[in-house]
Image: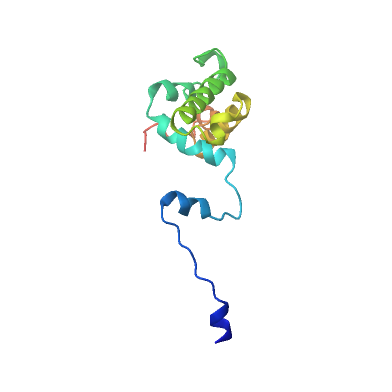
Length: 125
């Protein structure tokens, strides 16, 4: 009976926001993990996907692969600002986001190495 007296009633969250605020993560998501879902959404936008077509600087939309990565990063940041202004992605500098874009592109096997070596899946499946 003494143990029962010591129990305190749990107060459950009333809203989804309160529930999410209570979420305990052992590890915070990396910037790459935060960029990845935006990358997925923007992939359907031909203005975004075109920045990943080139394998060498002479084929790049903006004249260099790094410039194309920065433009893709800018689109990701603009999307984050418009759709989730509180997100860390909305406040990261372009250099960091461009690096993350390259990491995320490699996760999906659409990075420069995959396309240069012919490992990219050209059939869309």
